Image (cartoon, rainbow, N blue to C red; front, side, top):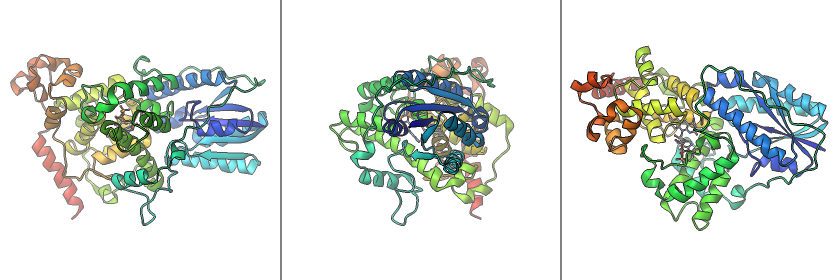
Length: 469
Ligand code: FAD
């Protein structure tokens, strides 16, 4: 009774709900459908696509150790998924299909089309909720609505979580060798950019496990104090691995509990804070299902649809290239382009700078981030951008506009992060790096601030106020 497992953003053999369920039923074959054109239409860039490919290679090896063959098919668009999977099902006399759900709208539509096509063909297909503790729609407000604010969501999450939701799924035992061979994996498709050096983000579940262990051993207990300091490696850097499922949130939660006397929410403050970040991740996945308009390029706060965003090509390019004249913003953007990753504090600062100081449509920033991030994940990226632009769930109130210079003094007090990414400012004394003296800019080859903070802030406030008129 051959079972087919369709792998997507769940590239691991341990604690994989669909894989565990399939292996409990019969011999397993796995398949990965590469959909480059679709991914590119979602703005995934070279870094993510390359990391994905390396992740597939890593799981192929791991599956090989279990005698599970991995098939690989190229489809351009999701709409081709039902046929590609049915072809495999017929060719190998598959009894059942198994996969773990993904929650953004296009992925949901694709999965529904697959479920429908399999039903029609008379083959059982199962979707599993694997990347969240609560299936979207099962953690709701008292009124039965999806949460649009994080804190009550998180409280309800902690209150209702049960041990079995966090229990690790079985890793399959090696099965009898099948006569089906794994496919040779294709090389990278033609991409617009060159991906970052593979050393930056080695792929695979084993490395992800090492990152988790390293984080808990050296950083976890200091997380609360250090998580906002971009010059310190104070966070887990697990986001690319979580985004492609090379590690699961359950594995993270279990590891926290074993460090923290069995607790998630009390005990060590650093670990508790970190658990909350994982709950943010789940929150935004629920939001994508509960408020699907966010998946259609719409703001969560409908009234902000009318906001008069500026069409400022020069400003946008300066932001993308790290030449805004605000050192922390520029250092952040250079980190993103060079490494495919940006520190969370800086994602907030850079996103707010684009959407408030430059008053440029957050969707342009969202797409630019996506094109560069190795951890690019629709729900978190969209949620983060809408938060910063004050158009989203649980947004920063529109009048809260970070002053990038104050943020810089507070979170990079010695200007270390700035000096690393903007070596031209490294010659300045630490205190001067936050706002280089005007008369030294030419000599430093560093641009003037492209906007004045106060004036830009006022312009943003006026634009938001105009919405209520
Ligand atoms: P840690 O601090 O170690 O946190 C652990 C994990 O929790 C992360 O790996 C991530 O999976 C999750 N997490 C942490 N913060 C958030 C958050 N605010 N929202 C959702 N999940 C969170 N995260 C992505 O994974 N992909 C994205 O595309 C993405 N885009 C973002 C865009 C903006 C504008 C903002 C403000 C945030 C974005 N984030 C995104 C969230 C966050 O910045 C990153 O998850 C974090 O910086 C990753 O570093 P880390 O793994 O060291 O995080």
